[in-house]
Amino acid sequence: MKKNLFRVTPVTLGTLVCILIFLGAVTPGCITSQENTPSPAPSQASILVYSGAGLKSAMTDIGQEFTRKYGIEVQYNYAGSGVHISQMNLTRKGDVFITGSTVEYNNAKSQGLVGPYQLVAYHVPVIAVQKGNEKNITMLQDFARPGLKIALGDVNATAIGKAGAKMFKKLNITDAVEENVVTRTPTINELTILMTAGQADASILTLDLINDKTMEAIQIPITVNEVMIIPVGITTFSENQDNARKFADFVTSDEGKAIFVSHGFPKYPDPAYADVKP
Image (cartoon, rainbow, N blue to C red; front, top):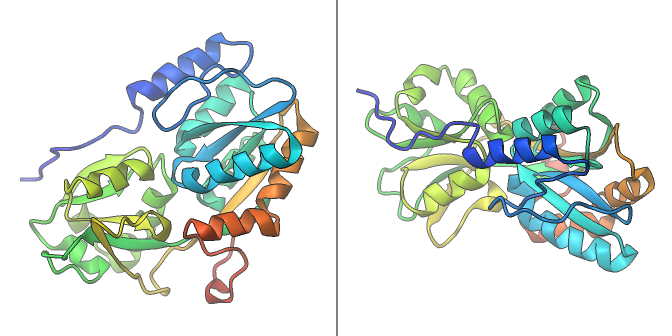
């Protein structure tokens, strides 16, 4: 019998609270970190950035350096792209959107929420297993082995969830893997927490999120892998276009990309991923 001991629904209570506060405010009202801690609404001298939760480490440093350099405050809303797109549609507030893949960005663009993007770095999926790899997991096909506990990102809310679904489909193991899934989370960061806590045997994370103290990473062959490219662009409803453009340009500058590299992201472009298209 399939066990769903840790199943997480894509829309959390915190997300619902954020959306409700957004709806009731004149300026963005639930500008949050991953822990859903409210922050003051941005002034004309600041910008609001919708950032993928999995980019938090790099974006925090980028925001600090951007503020130091330009004197413009950066406030972040960290969440999955599905939540961000819902919030942008509901509020028409905010200035910049940066997410885990161009697929997610193009979804927002097709709804008229954002303009053209610039490319920043690569999000490289890897197999994450517990330290010591007692289950002897060596490839994605092992995810279909009966009795394993697999944690994955939600397909509708996360870029990593969509990437995993595409890889399983390529290998024709979708149904067998689903039998082993014990949770699907609305952000990739929550997958990292579950793996760190030992609540799953394996997951698909990105290379930058592997915790060497508690996990091991197994590379996925490029012929199977769904390597993603991180895009950044300006919202169509931004009231701070000049500052928003400065920020997007800073993220994609050599200095901004170097910050991503320092957090484990290969910068764009990289010859190793020359066949990966946006």
